[in-house]
Length: 164
Image (tube, rainbow, N blue to C red):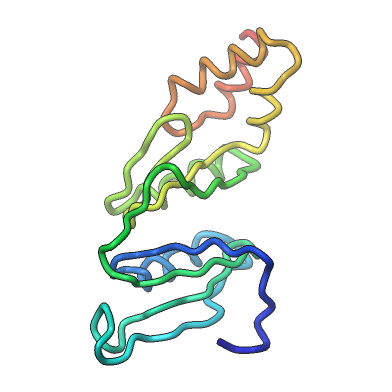
């Protein structure tokens, strides 16, 4: 790995069976300030064919991640997800569509799995304020509306919060 790459104290590490390269290449297309920072390749006798990506350090919206092609030992679960803070419904719609395309699976309450099996939460920036409002009736209405949704609808959440 290049010494010029600034590392952060804690980096999310993602274990893929064999498709880390495709996942990384896809993920860096989703957000501004995203790029592949460094790669290593498997040599002969590795867990996957020689020349296959072994690790990739990459950046998504300025945040560094590491991906590994480590074979089928481990799988992603919904216990870990990447949450995307979205300013607008257009951003929610765009990212939801890209992440569920080509084999991704929509979930409930803004959660989904992409085609690589990684779980994401695509949520509006105001969700925490709506669900955590000091008025329990407003918060409860927003939570009840969210529980009925797959992809989150910002207008419906705000209307429920307001009692409309």
